[in-house]
Every structure is written in structure tokens, then in C-alpha cells.
Image 1 (cartoon, rainbow, N blue to C red):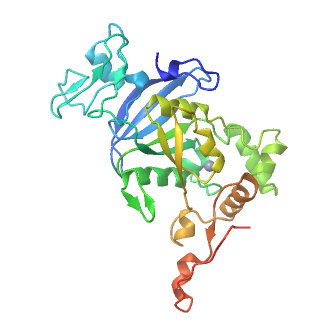
Image 2: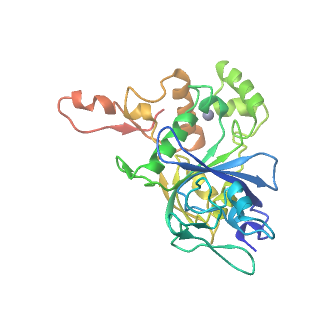
Image 3: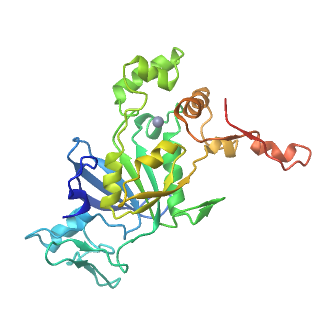
Length: 310
Ligand SMILES: [Zn+2]
């Protein structure tokens, strides 16, 4: 029995259905994992940096399956190439997976499988407007891009990156869990003067209806044990805790790009209000550097004043 199959009310059952390599326009290859679960019918995802981060449910040997079937669903080691016949061994790279003969479970040996290291993780909730429709009402698209960039980098400023390893768990819970239709109504209420929290409450939704238990289950399925979590939301750190299997060891902040550089990031009336609400009403740990980018003009002063945006 694997962890994700163990009986626990808190933890949904998740199964990785398929995994594929995606070459990206901006950085390293990623491995997109699609999950099924026993809580809803949505296709939740894990965007994985690192070929050696392996889903236990995807890689477990199934009775009677062929090596071709394993390759097609993505349960292979190394890299596919035309004419390859074995999923469990990549002869070009000299990699071979090991399995428990009795259960078929993958043996997570260090030569082939990412193991017991602090892993950069972002738990990201779907935001169609911010990620696809160029919305400047929120910073979801920017945060998504930023998380992926950090996972590919060794370091960015003071922040240690993932150096090619990391996981973005992508949960299909649009609009803090209320769905796109209700989110659009909330936007109209915001244009009528409400903030993002008030708007949800006026529509009789919770301020935040998201459920991160699927995120925990997916991380455990991927063999992640200790997490460096990319977030400004201290509540999210508690939501990835699942002792003894999963711990958050560090919070890695995500500073809006527009606060660091005038010429980058999102500049809009709406984003200022959105970030203000996150800080004031949702407890996000976010400090805006005051005039950081014009510090050099201030009479040679190198002091940078910061304050929480109000
Ligand atoms: Zn958004």
C-alpha cells in the first residue's frame, strides 16, 4: 500500500494518469503530470521540473502491462527516442528503475529518483483571467511565471532557486474556488466599489473557498518530503504540512515584479487594490519597498525604506 492509498480522511486519493515531457519556450524541459482523484472530476496537474521526480502511482508496475504501455503513459526513465522498447531502462543514459517484486512499487533509489531534498514548490490555483486573458486585476500569471523561472535558476537575487528541480501543483479551483462565472460577477462588484473579499461575501461565497488537500496528496505522490514553499501567504505553509510525510521547511517570498522594477510586472489601479486586500485582509506577508527603484536618486542615500502597503 502506498501513502496515497493509505486510509486517511484528510488526504484524498490521487492517481497520476499520464506524464509527458514538454519542451518550453523559456527554460528547461518540464514534465506535465495529469492527476485523477476521488474528490472531484477535475484534471488537476503537477508541473514538474526534473525528470527524476517520480509519481509513485504512475510508475508502479501494473499487472500484465507492456513496456510500450508504460512509455505511452509516461512511466519511463530518462528520455524517449524513436525505436526505444524499454520503459524501465534507458540504455543511452545508463539508467534503470528498480521495483518491489511483490507490490510493483517503484524503489526510489538515489541513482534514478529525487529523494529527501528540500524542493521548491508552488501550490497554484487556476486563474483563467490572469494566466490566459492578460488580466491586470491580479498577479496570478506573473506569480506562475516567476515560480517556473525560479525552479530553473540556481539563484535570483537573494533567493536560492531550484536549479532544475521543483514542482508547481496546479489546482483547478478558479476564483478562490468559486468558479469563473461567479468570479466574473465578483469583478463587477469590485468595479462597483467592493474589494475582492467583500465581493465574494456579497455573492454568499467564502472569502477563500480553496482546498489544498489535493496539493498535499499530489506532493506526497511525487515523493516530495520537505518543501520550500513559494508564497506570501503564511496560511499556505500550514496547508502543505502533513507529518510525518510532508513538511514545509521554508517560505520563499514572491515580490511583485513591478515593486522591484518600474518597467516590469503589472501596473494597474486594480492590482494595487488587489495586493492591498491580500495584505490587509488576508494576512499576506508582503512589504512594499518604497521607491526602491529611485533609491539611487536620493542624495547618495543607500537606505531603502520599507513599509507595509496601506
Ligand atoms: Zn488571478
